[in-house]
Image 1 (tube, rainbow, N blue to C red):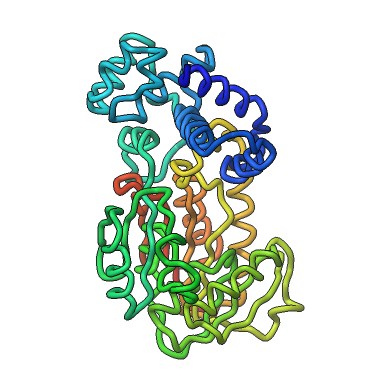
Image 2: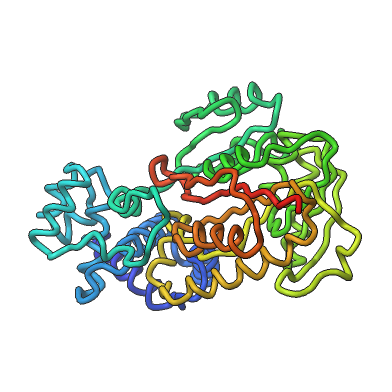
Length: 391
């Protein structure tokens, strides 16, 4: 039967998965090597794998198949033929609310929600129960529309059957997996009128507050999302972008050109080292430090990371964040802001690093907030704005 074949395929893929890389990179490679798998097989295998990993570290003593059935039960809200075949008693309750499902599993399977993500402490203000429940809900795909392109994007989407939600003037939420290339083809849209960027990432803009003609540095720029936010707020800035990885800076160029950002400097820099030889003459009016971190606020999109993570790594990330923050501060003008950002939910990577910057470097905290993406089917992030002393 089809359900039996789906289970065999799932087990085969799971056995092949090395668990040292993202599923999003592993699965396309696996499917390319197994071209006999049809599109339906690929879709079902992907769904089952992602749902399976949404259980995190809970129910460790259960068999793989049983954990999969429970994951399908928690992650599905419509009649599930796969579950009906293997566990009809669960499929009969598929329309229960998530709270009722969790209560049922607690009674019947000794399910413990806290075991899904047994790490901490979390940042102040995060509701642990709501956060944990969000792991069983697929996050949305968010885009940020380029200024003056709202009508173009909204019209193109209105010609499809794809549901979307507009959040403010420039932000749209769409179902995860939406094929935007099919809607905005390269032929019709050689320059894309939007950026793919998570809601919480977009909301970090509130801490930037740039002024015209200032000189800013995006110190860990990666693909340049924060720089593009900065540019959308104040296009007359001078900008330096840097990263330790030359490859990501190469990819950044295309995004910048697409958005109309053409005047900037790029530098490949290892910020764990002294970089005076590269930046000795630079003094910035603002520095964005989107620091390397555990990424724990994004694990709703990459649930496999929850199973692979070990809590002792948090201290290592904190040490790295303190080192990098200390090294970039010397290039910040007195009285100017350091914008400290992570996509982590851990207090050690967030408030504790901010407290270090205050106590050891004399910075003044102007604002800090947890961007609770778990309430909006988005990533959860942390942002703080700290001002360097005039002394």
